[in-house]
Image (cartoon, rainbow, N blue to C red; front, side, top):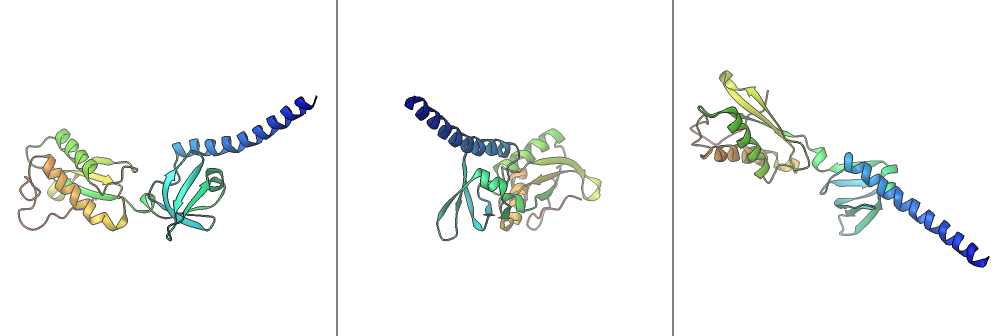
Length: 192
């Protein structure tokens, strides 16, 4: 009889622990579909702020400004008001208008634009990449590339690296690429 009572108490304790663990894991599964943040974002959860260094199955790991590591349980972050101070989601995407050089097909130019965005160190892999055809200055066909930026401070460098990567993928330098301006630095236009 005493063994049955002990087993029932142990089963009850295991069920309570499993419920909390199951709650943490279920929240993480929801976040796998619609993540509230990304690595590198700066968050504030219930007054605790820091940079996200890990999105685990049971917790979010934050690194505070003074170097402390704070583990916030997923269920707590799910119930709380989560405020993104900075990061991938807080920076608007860049839009770069890439004129198609004469003699370059749309498919080849699209692949070159995609390659340029993927190799740029400033483009965020956590944000979707969008490339569409557009008409540029003088009604010439262009590609409009829209990409997320890793950090707001790198928006100009991101645009320039995409333009340079596009020209390089097409087999030339930005200044020597057909259709590029002959004089002066390359300055990307915004999509209209």
